[in-house]
Image (tube, rainbow, N blue to C red; front, side, top):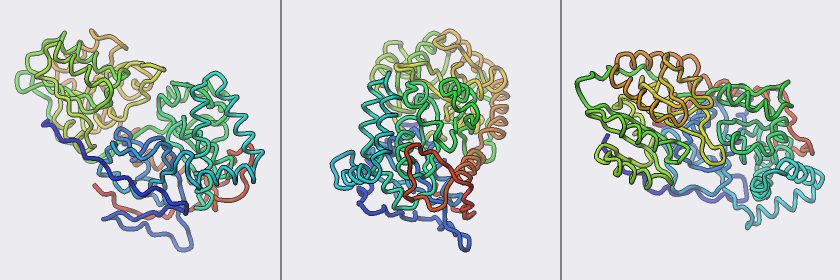
Length: 476
């Protein structure tokens, strides 16, 4: 794969005015028609960063909610990320994003004063539960208190908009903001949970999750983890909805002949210690394959160290660091590769994988996969059936698995076909999004922005029945 220049800086959308933000139709997309007499379900997504290059799975959910008939707004807790990459399929979301200051604005200060004046008991209960839930995690305590004013401003905006449902993209800070907004407004909220939003700290999970209309998670491993730490959910357990891939017709892919062509390995992801790219480099140095190339797509704090390591191991000419890439370039790289390697480990603060979307995308492209046996990964990489697994930190096992794919490409192709079949059954993006939408629709309350917020929150109404059923064409 030839290097692709990184996208230039993204101009941020205008800072949200204190009136309701404007939602702009995007070019080339027909408006989703409403059914006669029906309004579109107003859905707020709360995320931490926007845009974020690696969060294609969240943006695909957002786009599918729009296609299924929701009016979507995205509230991000950090300021607009000028360095983030907006993939082509997600460019419409730039018009749906809302940014508020943390403190220094009349809108935020006004929302805080109004909350204290109108619902002092709710504010006291929120503060009490934050202090109780974060008593063993002072960092989480400070961060939760820091986002409280902005969360109150979001709550006020949701009330004015008439929001029907709030969905937090993660169980961490987005879920905290959604939980606060739900308590202030009575609007039902739900959340998705993935990886380090669960593993890094469990502070506040026992306070937030039982009040959610539903908890969605992406793997059976996560479901068991949540139930272990939040036993109050035993009677209403998390729903497993996998992250998915866009499934077109299966690509034409022939197994790489053992005696012809360069063996092309691919890594896609951020360059952080928890991703284990150093383990991959060491395994390749140990293997000494005759003709190979490694393409590394992604960026992060480990990149300088990894580049030096590649040089010191004598791998420099064969290792190509491409930096952040758009989703379209990732797909092209997968089409050209013989193997995707996912060498993840457990990093600082217990950060690690949930069930990596890149594996789902690789199997959709019929690309063989070698990965660490870690958290939810064995639920998709079934050793010897859909791919090959190696134990955490086992560089010898990783080298052995790479050698096995190199020496028997026909068997690797058979496993990749089994992986594609599994993705078609359980990881189809449209099917997963439809399940998520059904849960959101059935737990939404028509006419969201009311004055019924209480100290406990988390109350859900019946199905709103407000899906327009219209179709919108996604921009590619």
